[in-house]
Every structure is written in C-alpha cells, then in structure tokens.
Image (cartoon, rainbow over all chains, first blue to last red; front, side, top):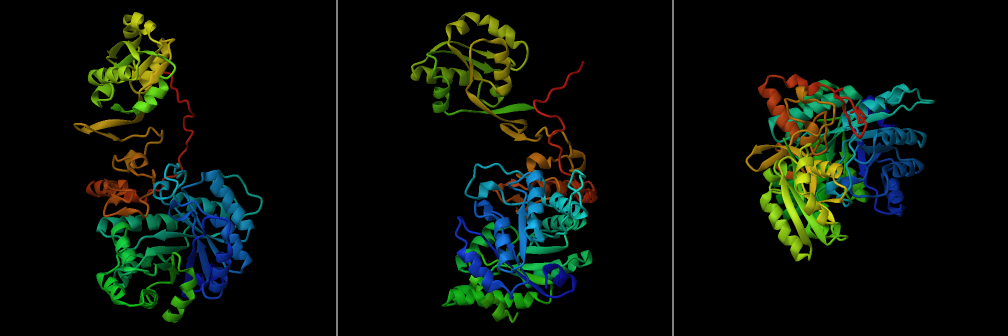
Amino acid sequence: MSLRSDLESGKFVITAEIGPGKGTDVTEIAEVAELLRGRVTAANVTDQQSSVMRLGSLATCHLLVDHHLEPVLQMTCRDRNRIALQSDLLSAWVLGVHNVLALTGDLPHLGDHKDAIGVYDLDSVQLLSVISRLNEGYDMMGNELQGKPDFFAGAVVNPGADTEASFDLQLFKMEKKIKAGAKFFQTQAVYEPDKFARFMKRVEGFGVPVLAGVIPLKSVGMARYMNKNVSGVFVPEETIQRLAAAEDKTRAGIDLCAELIRDLKDLCQGVHIMPIGWEKRVPEILDKAGL
Amino acid sequence: MKSITRQKSLEQIERGLSDWARVFIVGCGTCTTATMTGGLEQVLEMKEQLEKMDKWVSGWTVIPVACDEMTAVSIEEHGRAIADAGCVLAMTCALGVHRLNQYLERPVVPALDTLFIGVEETPGCFREVCGQCGECVLGETAGICPVVTCHKGLVNGPCGGTNRGKCEVDKERDCAWSLIYARLKAQGRLQAMRNYQPPRNHHRMPRPRVTRLV
C-alpha cells in the first residue's frame, strides 16, 4: 500500500494533513502518527503553513517515516530559491520521503514574520517540472545526478472558483501542472458536493486523480470566517445553521464532516482531510464516514 | 514615467543629519514635484522642519531635473551656500542623490525613500507597471505585467488566493491573472494562458546593470 500504488490501482484514497508546531516538541506528531497509521494511506505535512514559522516539513516527514506513516512533503516556493528547493528534494528522497506536493505558498505578509521576503524564485508549475527533471536524473540546469529520485508529485487546485473566469483560470493552471508532472491533485476545502461534482465533470478528461479537500467545522465563527476570507471556499448557510443549532458543536462538526465525505466519495478518487488542530479526531471522522 | 518617492519620517531625517548643524536643501522639479515629495512647497516646509530641529539652512534650490547632467550647473550656481553647509539634504529620488554625489564633495543625505518606477494612470495615482526584470512577457500576458502586478510575481497563472477577481492580500487590489485573463479573452487569445513560462534568469544582466552605447 502506497499513495502511488493505491491511486494507480483506482482505490479510494484517504490522506490527512499534519501541521507541525512551533518548537522542538514532537510528542504530538508521534501521537498523531500512531492514530493515523492504518487509517490513512498517507499524511501531508504542511510547509510553514500560513507563513507561520514552525518545525520544518522535511524533518516532520522523516519522523513520520520512522513511525511507518507514509508522508507527503508539502513544498512551497515561498522560502527557498531553486538551489535550496532541489537540494531539499534530494534530501527528502534519501530520508525516505517519496511523495511531494508542490505549492506556490502563502505570502509572508499573512504570517508571523510579515517583513520577510517571499522568494518565489520558482512557481508551483516550474517546481513540478523541476521534480520531473530530477526524476529523469538531471537537475534543472541539465547536470546529471549521481543517483536519482522517483518522486510521486502532486499539486493543488481550487474547485470552488466563484466566477466563470476564476474557474477557467483554475483549469488552465491545473492543465499546466499536469503537463509539468502532477500525478494527483488535492483540493481546497469543499463544502458543496453539487458544485464539486460540476468541477469533477470538467476535469474528468484530464485523467488525473483528485482528492477532495475537507476541513471539519469547529464553530459557526470558523465557517463564517472562511466564507468571508478564504478564496473559493463556501460553507452553505444550511450547514452553518445545523452547526449553530447543535448542542455539542464538536459532535456536530465531526458528523457534518463525515456526511460530507460520504457525499463526495462517489465523485472523486479520494479525500484529503485537513483537520487544522483536530488531527486526533480524524479516526472518529473516518469511523462515522464508514471508511 | 516617474520615479515614485515617499518622505522619510522626521526622526529618520534628523538621524541622517545628526552630524551637521548646517544644511543645504535640494528639491527636484520633475518626479518629486509631481509626487509632492520634493517640489518647491515641500522644500520650504522641510526648511521650517529643519529649523525646528535647530538646524541652520544655508540655502535651498529646486533643480529642474536632478538626475541629469545639468545638475552640475545648478550646484555651481549655489556653490557658496552649499559650501556654508555641512551637508546636502536631497528631496530627490535616489537617482538625484546619485547625481548629486557625483558633483559634490559634501555628504548628500536622502530625505526620501525611492519606492518604484511608475506611470501616472489618473491624476495623482501612480502605478508600478514594470519591474525592469529584463525578461519581458508582456506579449503573452495582454500587456499586463504579472511580475509586478501579481503580489507573488507569478508568471504561470494565479495562485489559490484569487478571490472574485481580487488578490487575497488586499481585497481592493485586482488579481493580476484575472486582469490578464479578461484581456486575453477580449483579444480572442485565451490560448496564451496555456504557455509555460520557464524559471526566470535573475542574472540576465548582473548587478550593477550597465549598458554602453559605444
């Protein structure tokens, strides 16, 4: 069982996201790894998520390898130039990290080191083509590698574009990413299965597996915040009302997420759970979803 | 095209002048006059501010185009007053500061920060349209530069932060790629959205960049 073989064999795949903390305490990572092992095919590790400085994705992925949980190295273009990106990719491979998710990366301005420079020497499309080149045994300048990796590279797409233009823009970029070497996609959080079904119809022809992103709702405030601030994410009012009416919000958040996963299951090739602090509740969500 | 500047804080200016009691002020009749950061009015205001800092202003002038070679002539005209000062406070862009340094032995202290090269789109609104990257993609992006218009400088399409045609960093700011898309569509050239732009060569011309005509 591996992310690559499961997706290639057409199995419905579950991945979850782990966000390293700020500091050197890795107790929780170990606990979460134990809980997720056997329940998810692979776990993504975020790369300085929201531009907040934390423990690195590569080191955390390596810890997951030690815990026998297959990692997906999230790699953004925000903090490293092309030399560091390629070097870290080679480092990841020798540390047993075989999946990589290429991202542009949030702006430093959104995080806790607001004055930092955003590097963006490469963008996500260029990073994917660099990964493909490394897999062929060459660095991006065409220099031969002594020993080459064989990364399974993925990318992200936002299926919830709100206008026809932004929808088109997402598809153009998705196409570019596939051409550059993306073998799978994980999406921005989905809350509307019908809208997502339309997206899947449009990208069917690309023939690349898509894992629908889901974020469990923890509160009404969180839902409203995302509707207002997060691009392409829309939590329907009906969902918000169900959460508002519930006495036990945690229970309701888990139920809603499980229900959503059941609705999405037949539309795509997998789900990607982004628990944002609820890592330990992932098994419960999966139980409820019957997975 | 204008060199866009912003005045430093008075604290920063005072710090820059801390070694000298006597100052000569230079403004510029071109860009900093247009942006109201170094025109006649601002030079006179600065004179008052410096006097409040207990500086003695030996003189002032607004040079027509501080960055060109005629600056040498203006400096000569004010040779006496400049000689009376310990330093020159430049209310010009950095190009003017550079030019003044070329002709003056006295230290030149900038009163302004040079922000970008911009065009005046509507009266009083200056926009950065070119980052002088040395690898122009405007032909494939409908004349809108993604290197300066996109917050991340992305050349292969938008990031995930584009929201209703706006940038997630600032809801007032248009997403560069939404603008590019709309114009390419109007021109019937949406195919250009598929063009792969390779990683940029940051050393197309290594710094300091120089060209020689002869």
